[in-house]
Image 1 (cartoon, rainbow, N blue to C red):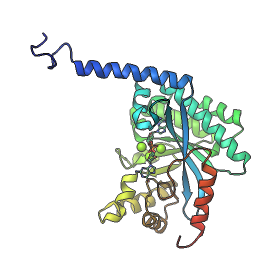
Image 2 (image 1 turned 135 degrees about the vertical axis):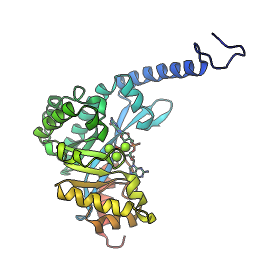
Image 3 (image 1 turned 90 degrees about the horizontal axis):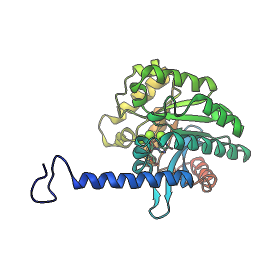
Image 4 (image 1 turned 120 degrees about the horizontal axis):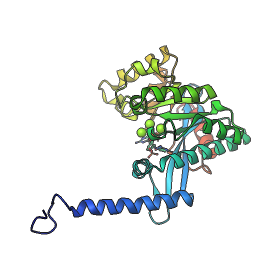
Length: 285
Ligand code: C2E
Ligand code: MG
Ligand code: MG
Ligand code: MG
C-alpha cells in the first residue's frame, strides 16, 4: 500500500532504496569493466625491521584508478567486490601482480618480503593453495617471500575449512599474518589452533600508546605473548618517532605506518625504501 504524499516510505517501494540499488548496479558494472581493463593497481607500504633499522618488505594495498573518479581506496569498493562475487578474480590478479613485483625486486637485488590481503570470501575456494603455488612457480619466487594477511573473521567463519586452507598454504612455505589483531575477538586460542607466523597489531593500539591509557601495557603484553608462542609482530599505523621508539624498547620486531612511509607506487618504492634505510641509519634523525 503506497502512502499518500510521494517520497515517503512505503512497504513496497522506497525511492531511496531503489536509487541505492541502481547505484550499486552501476558500480558493479564499473567494477567488471575495471577488471577487464586492468584499472587496479597495487601500492606498496614499507615494513621496517626495527632492530636492523632497515626496510624488510612491504604490504601490497590495492587502489582503483578510476577513469573519472581518480584513485579510489579499497574500503570504497572491496565490500561490493566481495558481495558481487568478483573478489575471486580480483584476488587472483593481486596474487599474480604481487609475485611479479617480488620477481622484479629479486632481479634488482632487493630480497624483500611482500604480503597481500586475503578476504574471507576467498577462502578456501577463491584462492586455492594450488593457485598460490602456481603463481610462485610462474614468477620463480621462493614461497617464503610471500605472505598472506588474513583477519580473525576468516578463522571464525569456518574453522575446519580455514584450518585446512592455512595448513595447505603453509606447507608451500608461504607465510600467514593475522591482520588487525586486537580489533576482533582476539581469542588467544587462535594462536594455538591455527598455524600463523606473524601478528599485525592494529593501529588503534599503536596510536593510543602515548595517551596514558592501557594501550601501552596491551602492546607490551601482545608482543610478549606473541614471542612466547613463536610469532613475529608487526605494529601497524606507526605515525610518530615516539611510537617507533616505544616499539623498539618493547622489542617489537617490525613497524609499518605513515611515519615511515605512506603506501607508494611500485615505481616510487625503491627510492622510498632507500630513503627510509638512510633515515634509520642516522642516529637522532
Ligand atoms: P589493512 O590490511 O589493515 O591495511 C592497512 C591500512 O592502513 C591501509 O589502508 C593503509 O594505507 C593504512 N595505514 C597504513 N599506515 C597508516 C598510518 O600510519 N595511519 C593510518 N591512519 N593509516 C595507515 P588502505 O590502503 O586504505 O586499505 C584498507 C583496507 O583495505 C586494508 O586494511 C585491507 O583490509 C583492504 N585491502 C587493501 N588491499 C586489498 C586487497 O588487495 N585485497 C583485499 N581483499 N583487501 C584489501
Ligand atoms: Mg593488511
Ligand atoms: Mg591491518
Ligand atoms: Mg584493516
